Structures are given as C-alpha cells and as structure tokens.
Image 1: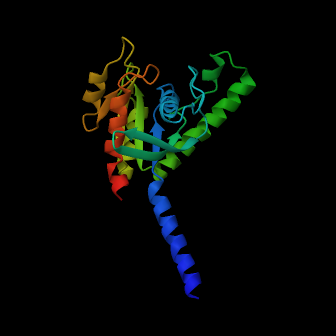
Image 2: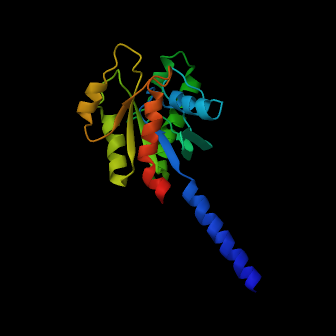
Image 3: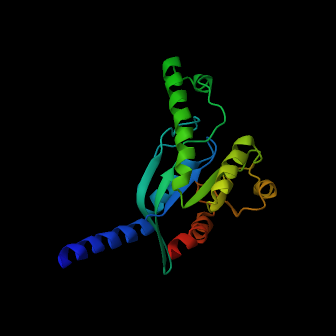
Length: 215
C-alpha cells in the first residue's frame, strides 16, 4: 500500500515539474511580417535546422507549427521553451489574393479556406501561451486594424508581450513609428532574415519569460 501511494505521489510530482518546464512562446502577427523567417532563425541558431517554409506569398503558413524544447543559452543563463509559429492574422481572407500570385483557382480557394481556419486556431491558442512575440513589418504602418486586434486580445488575456519590428535591414524600416504607435510595449528592431540585432531579441526573450521561469 505504501509503495502504491509513493508511486502515485512521484508521478504527480513529475507531472507538476514537467508542466512548469513547458513554457510556450508564440509568434503572432499579420501575414508576411516574417514570423516563420524568425522561427527559422531561432531554430537554426539553437537546433541547427529550420522550422517551416517562409514565402513571399501571404498565408504560406496556414497551420500551427510547434518545435519543442528549444534551448537558448546566454552565459550562465538558459531558457527552454516550445516555440509556436502561427498563421498570419487577418481580418479578411479572399481567395483572389492567391489568384494574383498565379495560383490556380481551386488551389486558391482551398488555401483561403485553410488560412481562415488558421486564423481561428491562432486566436484559440492564445489561451495556451506563456508569452507572445508579436512580429510586425517595420516598413508598413504599425497602427493597423489587424495589429490593434492582436494586441487587444493579448492585453485582455494579460499575456507577456514582446513587439518585434522586423525587416530593419531595408531602407523603408521605421522602428520609431512603431514605438510611437505602441509606447506601452518593449520593441526590438531586427532582421530575421539577416540576423541583425538578433542577440538583443534573445535577451528580450529572457526578460518576458522571467516570471514563468521563476514559477
């Protein structure tokens, strides 16, 4: 009897500690902001392999993608988490967007259907996130309906947020405009493609996940 109780107790403890270690960090943002490119950069740096397919065509990522046990090491500090790359959030998805890219009509309609489901799944997954990195295109107007919707959903859930202004390697990038639009958030300007300021980004990940690591 004592042996059975001890076994049950050990299992409960193992499950408890396991749950605490499974920190989920989600990559969110509008289509073509560079979420998957950033996911590939993170996985390339710390796992030696890419996570998904990045494309100039909007909604290339239409399903939730997860890479488990990504570990970032900075000096004597270590952060292990499950990385969740989500489909681009959009207020409207029209199959004609894909037709313009030369995609056949049947495939375009199927992609639009999958992309719509992907947006719904992305919003649902917000409830499972310990922290969220919102990836925005720093070459576009930051104060868009989509961006405000994403940040509003996160604020309502009280999820730690890091804003990333991607594509700073381009002449059109304007991080200052992003900071003016969202002064309440920490913002890191990076180039996920070129790796510019990526160390600042990793440092910021330690900051926004510090509460989860302590718990």
